[in-house]
Amino acid sequence: MKHTKCALIGLAAIILGACTSPSEQLVADGFTKMTGAEISRSLVGNSLDGEDSDGEYVIHYTTASRMAISYRGRTETGVWRVQGNQYCRRWATFGNGEERCVTFYRNGNQINWVRDNGGISDRSVLVRGNPARL
Image (tube, rainbow, N blue to C red; front, side, top):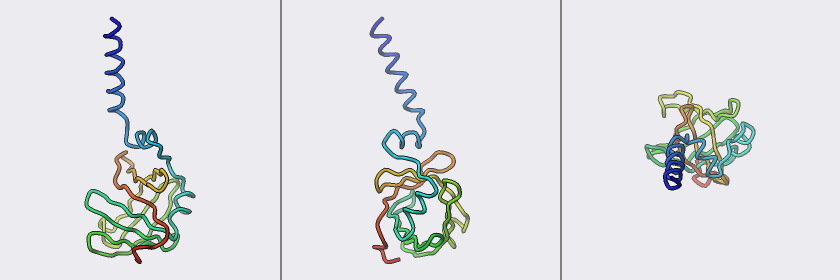
């Protein structure tokens, strides 16, 4: 009976762990959800070196509303803003020029981008300044 009870508790822990959302897992891994003010303070004048499902990129945030990206052999400019506690961005042609908003979760210099559906879209590292010279 004691072994059965332990096995059931272990199985329940595995099932509950499998039901954890990506944002809940990020928090469990030491990430914290960034506020709008934290996003603005962190990005202006700095860069994100990251990757999404299609490849690696570097984004430099030149001002509180402008940015430049090097991605898949191309360079492009765009605009960004903070809406509540979400980061929103729009490129001239990338993403069909549509604005997309995500929630940032940060642990040290690591920033993960979480979509409204809960999935992680990007993983990036905050880099001081503009080392890619964008």
